[in-house]
Image (cartoon, rainbow, N blue to C red):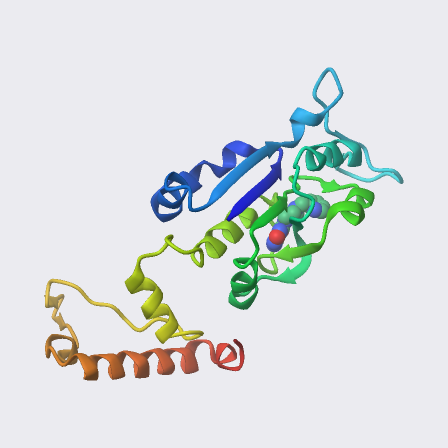
Length: 222
Ligand code: 4GX
């Protein structure tokens, strides 16, 4: 899976080099190619934005600079996603669908908006990561890369995938580790019983109860 990311702040993607996604990048199971939109400015001061036509606060990213950055990507089959609050709100079903694509292009706006003409020209779909306002599309792009990468073969270990398919669409059952007694609270007896079939059933019931109580809306999805 290849992600091309069009951004003014490629340094913001450093955290992806850590932990599970970092390992997947090292193993070349996934690839994240960061394209600095500023590199495509034709201005001697590397300017990429300008004042909005019609007036108003803030600056707007120039369509020509964004278009040239996009055009530097060879694969014309890859879908372009623009991270924006106007988009369809990302959920696990969308994540699963995205993971089937071979090459994804992510367009990040920062501070300012992007000239509508280049959005209309190159963007296939707008995706939001939730109904709140961020300062840029970089964090949403990382959320998308992280959640989609989990479905790529070899990113997660076998056990995690089995647990996920077992609990699919439900919230996680509670986990416990040593010590067996902590602040007067002991670990649920079933978990130390060694009865694997009963443990499995208990965990599933816990998952169902927690989902019913905390997020009943999730039961009608997936
Ligand atoms: N889920 N944002 C995009 C760019 C922008 C700035 C001004 C228009 C006008 C967001 C979200 C999100 C903030 C990313 C605005 N566009 N993206 N950015 N929530 O809030 O995806």
